[in-house]
Image 1: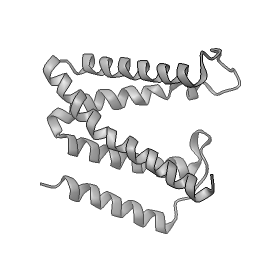
Image 2 (image 1 turned 135 degrees about the vertical axis):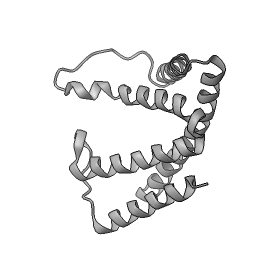
Image 3 (image 1 turned 135 degrees about the horizontal axis):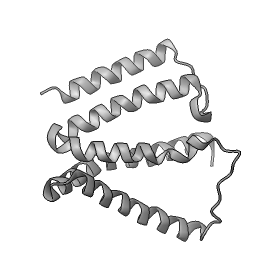
Length: 151
């Protein structure tokens, strides 16, 4: 697969992933409201995620050998903390703030975080410095978020 085809494939995959974020917010926020318990709804979301991920792992790779490599910095094993924060936050906030507003501000947070991670090359990420063009793009996206949530 060529470079452009791979870029298009990855962009389409992430577009589909992005389509799921508001669906997750609406479904899990609705579950939290019906259960009257955002923590329990978040637990169900994480359990469903574990079942899906383990199922895909077993179907595609079989049972891997579980090991912790001491040469890997410990913080790399805790990325799931941010998944939990996202799920808890979205489940609690979306029904109160609106799915659109919640997702829009998650997007804004993602834009800020991605720019900092890329600029500083944090966590072993590729280094892409913040340029004037990138600042302009981020400013336009930020304005778009605020325009999108304005009622």
